[in-house]
Image (spheres, rainbow, N blue to C red):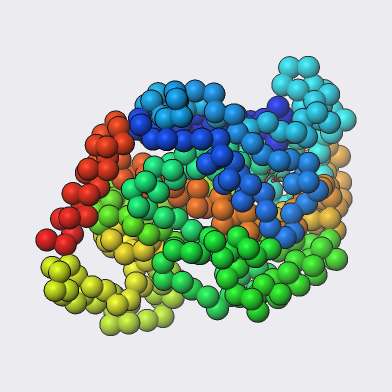
Length: 383
Ligand code: EPS
C-alpha cells in the first residue's frame, strides 16, 4: 500500500489517497469519524478545536459499503477556511496580511523559508502544522478496520505530561482505549491525571507549553511481520520511521527502550518456556514484541516522546526574517498541550505501517486471502 496527504491548515481541507487497500472490507464514515473525534479531544487544546468538527467524505474506493480494491480518496473539510479564504485560497487568496516573519524557534518556520525561498513563514507553517495529522488519522482508521477484523488491536495512553508520570503500564492493548478515552488527558492513572492537568494549567497561566510521552500497544500481530534479512524490512525501523514523522515527536523506542543501557542481558531478554499446547510462553516482554526486526507474537510496545509545542503565547527570543532585528516570536493561537491527541495519531499512523508490513507477508488483494494467510501464520507459531 501507499498513501499521500495534501492540504494546508487554513486551506479548504485535507485530502488523502490510500492505494493498495484490499477489497471486501466493510467500512463506513462512522469508523473514520470515530478516530477523527478521538484526535480532537484532550485537555490543553487551543481555540481551533472548538471551530473544527472533523468529518470525512469518502470519495472513492468503495461500493455498497465495502472496499473494492481501488484507491480510497478521503476529504476532511477545514471549517476555519470560511474565515481564512481571503488569505489562504490557493488561487485567489492574498496571504500578505497574515505574513509571519518573527519565526518561532522549534518550528519549521525559519528553515522552511531558507529551503523553499520564502520571505513569509506563512508559506511554511500552513503545511508544517499538525492539522495534517487529521488526514493521517483518516487513513489509519481505514487500515484499523481491517486490522480489527484480523484480531489486531491498537491502543495508546498518556504516561507523562510535563514530568507528571503515570504508574500504569498495561501489558496488552485490551480495554486501554476504553479507559484512556474517559480521561481528559487520556491517562490510565487517576493520580497522574490531576498532576498532568495541573502541569497544563500552569503552562497556560505562564503562556508556555508542555510535552510528554505516550505508550502505544498493539496486540495480535502474528509472529513474522517484518524481517531480519534486510535493513528496510525491519518492523521496528519501519514503525519508528512512521511514528517519528508525526509532528513534534522527538523519540520513539520499543520495549525497555533507553533503559536497556542500564541492565544486563539476563535482565533484558524474555526467556522462553514450553507450553503443553506446543506453543512457547514468555513471562516478560522487555523486547516490546519485536526481535530481529520481526514481530514475535507478543504485544508490540512503543513509547513516543512529544516535545512542547513551539508556539508560545509568551514568545521566545528570535530574529525577524524581514528586518533582521531581535524580536519576540509571534504569539499565535495554538495548543498548549497536544500529547493526548498525539497518542491517537500514533495509533492510526501505526495502523497503516503494521497493515502495510503485514500485507507484504500475506500478499492478497482481498480480505479473505489476507485473513486465511494470517490464520496460517498464527498456526505455524504453535506447531
Ligand atoms: C497548529 C496550530 C493550531 C492547532 C493545529 C496545529 O491551529 P491554529 O493555528 O489554526 O490555531 O490547533 O492543530 C489543528 C488544527 C488540528 O486539527 O490538530 C500548528 O501550528 O501545528
